[in-house]
Image (cartoon, rainbow, N blue to C red; front, side, top):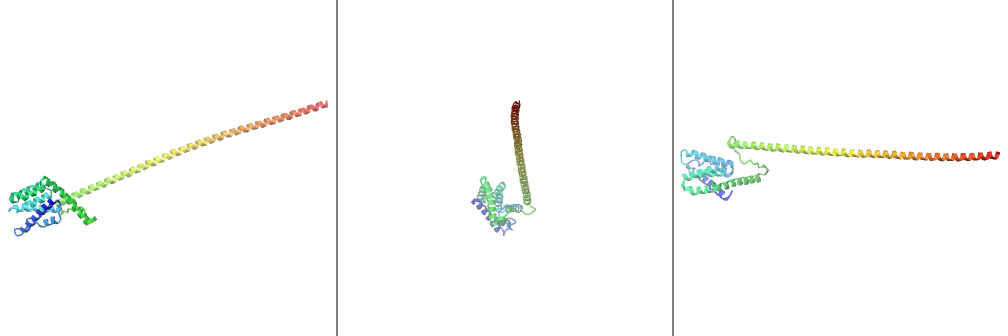
Length: 275
């Protein structure tokens, strides 16, 4: 707590304890159950503060019906209300304390200034938050992994317990909803990745088929060109053989004519000699 809040809380608690001790001879206690003050002193949290504040209220209601409320009770109750951030109610009981005991006006005005004024309310609210953070940090350091963030344990059946259970149920539902949304998002991501893989697979398969068709087309063209070249070559070879045969035929014909002419010439010579 800040120095002012610590001073105020310590003063208020000291007043309560002094009142409890002083009143033992007059009545049982300034509050109905002094153990609640001890509980709040040892464990200052929302639960013990609410129980203490409720006991102050019950004491005021009970005493007010038959006798005057003792000095300091209204102020102490107002301090507990202010710490619970019920500032308007705290102001009312600070005023009741000053009306019942005017001699305490200076001190009560000091409390009002530091707890229920505009600046005081902001200071108390900020300090309550910081105290909660510091307390949680200290408990976590002390208990380690065994620390559970369940600072307030209300008795079963109480209004606070029911509200706590309701909040826990809402928190569980919200957590389950968050998990469900996370699972759904993960499932959607997996489906999207699967679709992308399928698309890539189809694109790869299509590309392979296109390459295969192109390669087949190129091979067909090569076979056609090879067949065309072989046909042209065979035709050329056939022409060459034909030309060669024709040349041989002409040569044989020429030789035959020469031989025939030579035979004719010999025959004519023989005939001439005979005559």
